[in-house]
Length: 464
Ligand code: ATP
Ligand code: MN
Image (cartoon, rainbow, N blue to C red; front, side):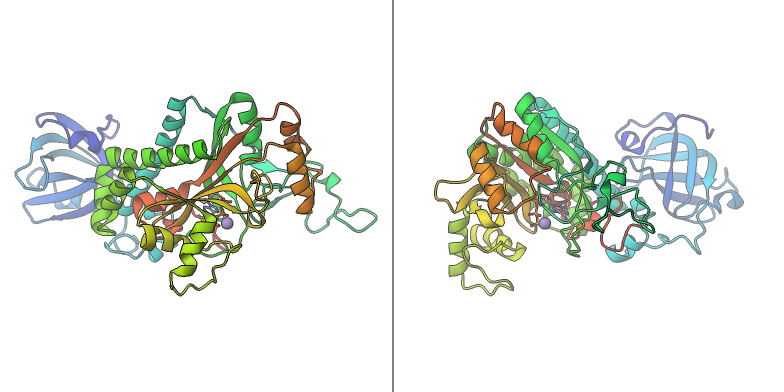
């Protein structure tokens, strides 16, 4: 019987009673008495369990003994209409096979109601909880919806490299990739590390962003997007930063900042609506257990126009707010999450797209405005999160770009290929980066980014 094809619980719960079926999954709870046992079984296909009824005239107590919370079983039985109120159908068991036991004395998820902190310590088992089941199913749905959104629009998915030799983006501290023997580092006559002896013949790192390579794609394919892992060795232990996170970076030829903002707004609304339409059981669970305003907040984002505001006007509002911020606000300051959240949550009560930031606090590639002070950046700010998207129109003039690189005293020997896009057939273009886990924070209502990725990498933490 253990070799029978299983039916998924998600499907059974929507099926008509009256057939003989096999289910396989992990036991959530068992209760009952000498005459009858009820097992709630979950197989990961849905947050909902199916109830299995064991008539104890057909089974021995010995047979049911290893069926404890966390054990894995296969059951053959009849799908029947359930007399209880909780569910439409249940399974009357005829045969039982136990794949794997879970000793109640040592199984860490024996009891319900663990803290998120504790669950992070048992990251290898937390996918078995209802909460993480919901989160990871939503994560999958969002990943699928991202590809669908862009595919339907005629964008091409471009795979940009994970190992790179340029730190041109300057987006954050990088993880070095090397095969040099750290106990015996080769040095040149000046005493500097001899990277010609390293695997790639030069110093290389894990990527912090696929944008620069994405621009090469946009200048050939028109509209592309990347969706891959990015790495930042920033030692910032915040609830919004990971050392390894996933980023979606569309890059579009012939888009100016206005079209870039339109796309970003349409994109996020599409994803949130997709979650509301396709993940309702999981969202309802998270709404009931963690955040009673979650679904309401998601609906409101789908139906409101985002505010569009210049950095200068935003700073003005913050300075006049009378609010005590931990970090001071002034024109030129890099806005902190507290500032972003004030604009979104208290002032406008809507998502905000902030544009035209001072050039000093933004990357070299952003299009320079005529005022000589600001660049055509656009950050999308969200309730509870702050920055969820960072983007800009790109500087398409070779001359202006080279001047900016010089001004910023950047090492431009590794950038020649990027500059070639401006040398040969340059065009206005724009793009942005959406942090996938920041999106998931918003969609799931979780408050710590470690809880929306299966295996979080943060400073001093990479065990599982
Ligand atoms: P922040 O100021 O919040 O650190 P950033 O300015 O470094 O963000 P960008 O370099 O513009 O961010 O990256 C694009 C997007 O990637 C951000 O809008 C955010 O959604 C996400 N992101 C950036 N850093 C991280 C991180 N360490 N962990 C998770 N997501 C991140
Ligand atoms: Mn950052």
